Length: 322
Image (tube, rainbow, N blue to C red; front, side):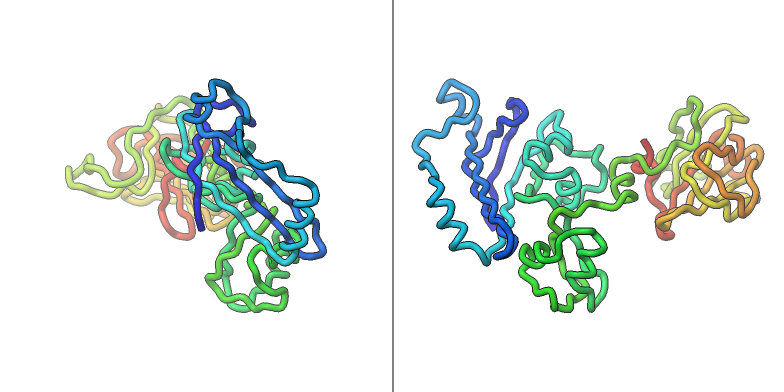
């Protein structure tokens, strides 16, 4: 599939810097055919013409009869066109999506973006011509209808876009594009960094980040399973997300600790507390105080050690909170 590079730098909203892009999207014979023709100008061409806006000398005029002919010839076709867009300083996913007439979910899904706050300047994004998300078939035997019902989208359009039959039994691992579908709430919260709240609401500083570091005890290279949030002794500690307290106690490493189990495979651990304020099997919210900052266990001073697990794997908490 051929991609065209696009550069929006220096343009106002709705004034795009693309070369001609023509995409024909036809769901099926019973659906209306949408003919979308975008006429765009590269920045260097704009400078030569000495004016802004849409400058398209020499391009043919498309008449209604020609559009009708295209519709007639393409009744059984359905195609997604992809454009390549280069990210510039100040770009936001929401603005890029609006400029292209698609959704933020579409850009996030198609480009496998794990954090919307880490959009790298110079990165090239794939931009499909219609909104939707990518979906990987999870198990053999799934059908387009079951997927369409789950995501509340039109099954005929799903089949047309992916060139599959409504009667097809899909194989695990098959990649589909789900037109007009959206990401689920948890996934969007994760990507936007809004799923968790910081467990310390008072002033604190990061004394040790997640990942490899030099051990403050041995000097050897070691892996830090969470983040250390340094603040005064006795500072309140809150649950980072609603959930159920599944373990409390003391061990030599984390001292006084609390573990909270959340939805979607998440667990959080809070260590080195001076005192525990939650009990096992207690349901907590983000406003629940579950303990107080201390320096119990293997600790160099008052701080909260905070670890997040996703399906049993330790992940960086700073990618999850706002």
